Image 1 (spheres, helix red, strand yellow):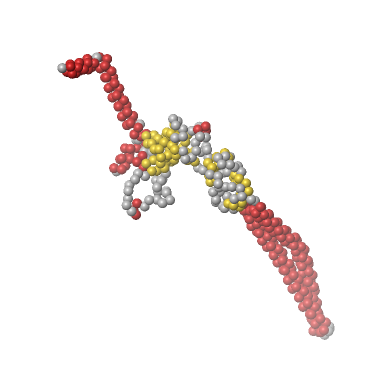
Image 2 (image 1 turned 120 degrees about the vertical axis):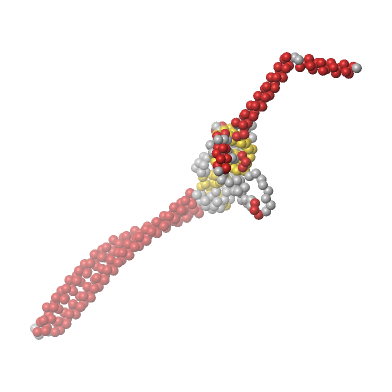
Length: 375
């Protein structure tokens, strides 16, 4: 009887409480607020939320430059330290220059010798000009002598035929005429030889100049190799992965260190292929850096890779060669990072990022995509 009395009393209390106008009003307001919150969530999801594509498979990246020597040699000095900040053009490593300086001096001496040979040929040309003038004079004298001898033979031939002059005199004059012709031919040959010698000297000068030009090209290469013994930073940034040591022998193309630009960072986000339907270059991105909690940075989609990450791997999958298991592929998306310098100084490549792309700008393309697919 006591329990029944107690139960009745509790029921009466509940009924009395529900009959309280304030309680009913509070419950009504709570119900309305809950309904409004649900409606707001649904509206926000339909207009905003479902267009937000997010991934935590993202990281900060930078276009780092690997420092490698162009020439082989022993490292004379390492001019930077690990994690040091350098500017573009700063010297990083100095190789031993003795071999390359000797090569440069050797080529310079070769050029000097070649140019000296050309100067000698030019001097010989000037001497040959005098020899040509002398040969021309001798040719003129021999020509005059031959003409005189020929005239005397012509004058004495009728006299010898008539008996007015002895035959022996005519024979002597004819012998002199033949001798004069021979001397004339020799003078012509001497002039031709002198002229050809002049041409030969000219060809020697051209050859010497060509050899000098070839040696100058070798000198440029030797000077380039000599200047390459000083390795300089091609960009500004911080030194990382420093593996070179003084006294070490290095080969061309060997990795010595990296220079990481601290002012040109970007984000690589690997989105699932199911998230990329409306991702377009130029869309805004919200970035959350794990190293900087409670801080949101802004970014912008720069570009989308032309293939999945697996497609560009060293050993891309060949799904036709064995049992196929479908997995969702990921596509790298490059995102520009918009942050003040004081924030960029705190970021380094490899840091984890959560990237969220706002794709609302492309939501109107859904219908056009569906219509194009149906057509």
